[in-house]
Image (tube, rainbow, N blue to C red):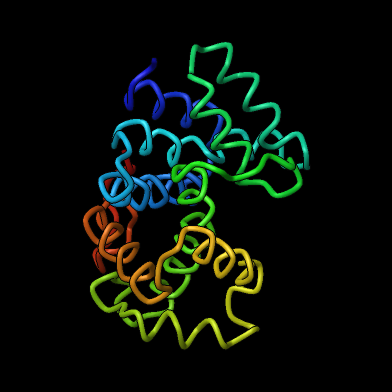
Length: 194
């Protein structure tokens, strides 16, 4: 199976947007944080997070994303476990989420984007300033980050069988570990993520 370095190279080949690359890194961090809890292999879970949207920039229309990406991944030797997890994160693909990996990707995807949005409105744009309560408060503001589907977050948490506050805390902490790569450490960026 291709490793993390190959996955990053593939992501960069298909995704030019810095914000989409950072989203991939955030979801990767969240999945890596959850892997030990559910007996998952951290490298595999991280690659799923990294590649879940790698084809979105080229194939933004449903069902092309993630269907076209799945063909590319198969051609490059990625295992079905990874491909099925990625396919399952898009409701319109009608791939049931049965494994902990599939459920975790779904639970973390929208939340990682929402946490990023919450961070970007903080005075210093730093994850160190973001608390569970600040994320919860922003959930209630329907005008804030309106493209983030809150129902997907809540459904994902319920399917995963975790407490919402604990889930938010896990994702914040995972993203804090790579805050400089995400450009969410309150410092001016001077390098590409990776």
